[in-house]
Image (tube, rainbow, N blue to C red; front, side, top):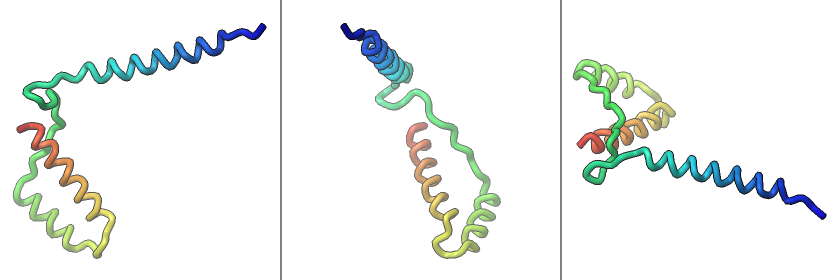
Amino acid sequence: MKSNAGCWKRRLAVLVIATSWLTGCATVRSEDGRLATCPPVVEYGRQFQAQAAEELAGLPEGSAITDMLSGYAVLRDQALACLG
């Protein structure tokens, strides 16, 4: 007769993992249909922004940094929208 203890242990492990994932989701509150916790948004002064724009203009066409900054801009917009 075969033992099925390994099968039960595997099912128990899956149940524990699924429960922890669901509990992680339950810890995030929502207020007025938006997340209660928004990431911080750093404010840059005009002089710093001008310096960054000048440095960005000096990068070669198709620079990887330019693409990364585009993604960063999207994240900033999303964080600002979260803050309201």
